Length: 270
Image (cartoon, rainbow, N blue to C red; front, side):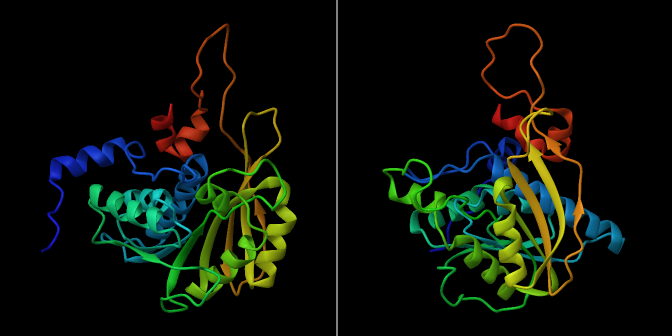
């Protein structure tokens, strides 16, 4: 029997609340700021593409997300860019099922597909077909930081081969000159550059992300293109938080106007 479709009012409420309300399985690494920033970064590219095409009805955009977790980044992109036709690849069954349920709750089950895949193995999808690939690979290396007692969470935090595995998978999935968007830790820029070069993904743009205007960048939003020369454009830093004025007991973030303009979903995380 076919599943009952979500009622329009339920879908509207879920979309208005996004990213609040996303299902996340117990023991998994919770999606957060990185996924939302990644979605907003890719959405900016989609909006630029739409403006260049100058068509009343945008052409479909074929997107894949690697290690999609509960689907937050891909779902966010699809909500902001309706032309998205997406595929989320995830190896953890619990996360995969959560992503499918989240897509259904948001009324996106017709445009987004979530499929089981181990990125280190041959992928169960056609190579060279995607306009865009998204990735938020694990930053940590084994032995760095305190290990999590939860296996599902630990696998999402630390993996020595993950960055290269993700880049290789992106290169396989992308069409010629397709766009790869990822978020990674700033202190590991050299690792990112090496992985991109190895897989023929030419680094084209970086936005440093910093917590405060007086802080160094902790994250990098990076865009690369398949089989393209590296011609890096380093953009102005994205500053997330503004200073608090006067004594306060506020514990939730004070987002800058710049951060909210870049990623409006941040307002839902306060």
